[in-house]
Image 1 (cartoon, rainbow over the protein chains, first blue to last red):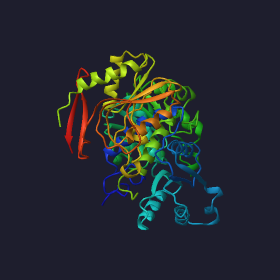
Image 2 (cartoon, rainbow over the protein chains, first blue to last red):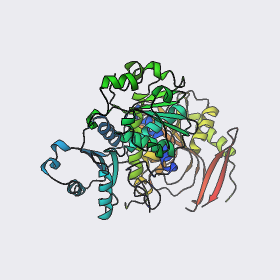
Image 3 (cartoon, each protein chain N blue to C red):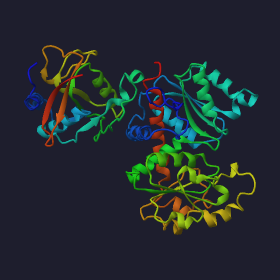
Image 4 (cartoon, rainbow over the protein chains, first blue to last red):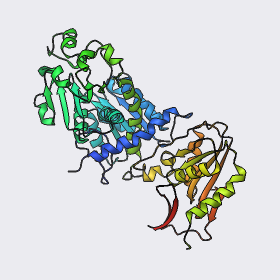
Length: 324
Length: 166
């Protein structure tokens, strides 16, 4: 079966998850993003690529950074952006997800950027568009449940490539609450597809999915052991809002054992970089001295994120298979 | 068609341009042939400002039908465009659409005082009201659409032109 994200020419039709995307598609996104980084330094921070296109940001779950960076990316491509916030939308009045989508299609939407608490919601929308013959409308997953956050995964890859050049000689550690993290799933998928020989996952047993080894990672339950000699440290946010039940004692306790401090980071390679998808819980998963230190590339991730999202949106809107 | 001596055409172009440029004139080459040509012109004309380069992928008018070029290059304008005398440099002038895209892109960096166009070869068949100020060779008969002229640059920057049948 064809990957539902690719059209018959093998080009991206939707971006729903990194799982199953071939390496050359991921590399193409990173290559395309590179020239977009320079647009921010121009007198006119705008390119005419998506002029006349309407992009709807459908956020059924709160987000400031992701929604803002998608919005900036779309606006720098000259698209018209409409932000729909669930709290003010008709969903609150009982409208179904697909009815909302149909209504927005009737307003000539060209692309949906979707965040939803339910895993698979963007896939459901993409399937619905295909089933109703509207395959000129594209869907970008901006985070669904515990499933995937592909643009975050891609911007992390862009950041790593920017500083480390080559993926094929790296050891990368993902640290923290993997269980609740869609970011971690997208990162693991992207890292293994791009040929990183060793991906480590570090966290307490209660916050790692069972059988996580099957994703091709090495599991460590001791952060000091896991960080030894790594090139890249990818911290995850402790997802308090997704926590139900007693998975860990207290945030303070978590910090003592799992928080990234300068002393623990010293076990990694001297030139190791530290990533964090934000928003950071200082003093919980990361110490301020590391977050603000020379090895942190956390704010660069935000800047690169705009270029990567511009690349994704322009690749979707400009592919040959669409009926223009 | 006669064979084209790119180096001889280059010398012709330099002599055409020399009386009209000042050391402050800025060159901007269009990827990829125009960038090589701009680098050589910059040297031959003794200009002070470093040459810029433009990849027009993000400004093309056929984006909606053809999509994005798979590996766009970086646009790099290393001088303030505001108030500058700019010469856009391309190897081969054809429909004029690339030139239009380059002018549009240039203006997103500021308002130049003046923009001119220098090309090595004009192969004819323009689709827009665009004409070069300097051109080393205008082909007497337009090339058929199935053919293309490609500039190549050797290890020492020496230029050659190749006629390619698609």
